[in-house]
Image (tube, rainbow, N blue to C red; front, side, top):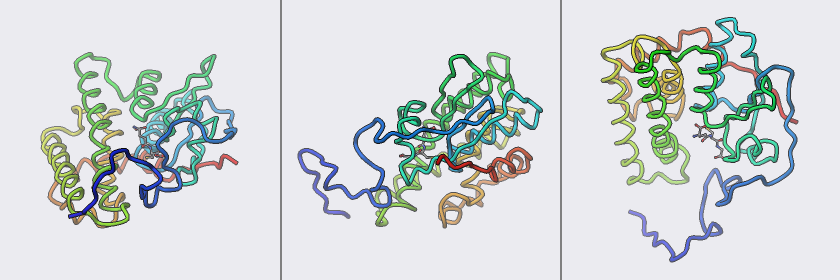
Length: 263
Ligand SMILES: N[C@@H](CCC(=O)N[C@@H](CS)C(=O)NCC(=O)O)C(=O)O
């Protein structure tokens, strides 16, 4: 057990942020002027190949697969460990300073979209794909999309952080977040026992969002040793669904996407 006694008032000067000390500050807003490049495609994506980032590239590659020219995009790399997310142009698109962010230049004026779930929904509504028109079915897709947006921070910011990134291995947070992560994995496994996709028989933005985290975890692509530690081999329906989606050409392309530099 740690013997840390919190002071009366917390101060960032005494806090050890480990691997993230170069970027973490307790304030929001832009930290320096930085122009972002724009290409000539209708959609400009500023992102990175993380679980939240790949949601957007998978969706855009799925739209490309359907031959939708209006969904063509330029993809730029925001190096979050170097602090690109705090540059002025990026903050103007996403005041929350997190990837992914999208600028839709086909609209006048351009529309900014941030939060990966909001971007998926924007693209699904705009192009009328990967979201059902039927009200009840659409609601079920949104149930899972919003579930993922609320649940995955326990996996990434909780389990992944303490299992993989934290400067020391601490039993209490690892136990706490492993318990929750396994509960979520069991939920998905039980749901996927009776249907092909998470919101029913069709592949939707809910699958894209959930796969980017839980599918990647099931592929052992997120945190070294996690597959074994979480006993992912015991979630057979989740593994089958992971494979089904991994075989999609758009998903394969998205995972190998080329990011242009911003400087
Ligand atoms: N809820 C946000 C989370 C985005 C997020 O956490 N992005 C991470 C990378 S996966 C990031 O940009 N981190 C940089 C930072 O925290 O400074 C979303 O889904 O878009």
